Amino acid sequence: MKKRRKHERVPVTSEVYLWDEIEECLLGQLCNVSYGGLLILTERQLPIDAVFQARVQPAQQGAFPSFSVGVETLWAHPANQAGSSWVGMQIIDLSEKGSSRLKTLMERQAR
Image (cartoon, rainbow, N blue to C red; front, side, top):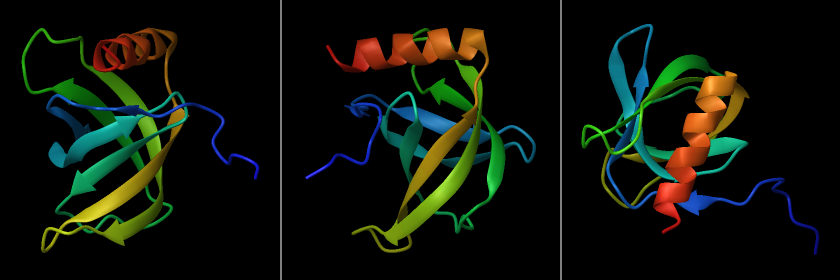
């Protein structure tokens, strides 16, 4: 069977949040991350194919530097928690600096 993913996913074991930089509101909490995308747990209804200019930010200041990322919602499924959903997002825009910070996040989570 062929794998669908180009990049390995890394579980996010600390509190890391995804914020909408335009609306200045919380999109959700990161559950796993790869160089190609993110999985978040959210209480919001996020439409499929929506594009967000977002910020990845740790709850604990100094855990790693926050960074901006452009993402597109690919799918959403209900979670076990009432009113919550799992949302898969593809990274569609990431600066060189953001890419370096994403790598730092992934390395720290993999420990």
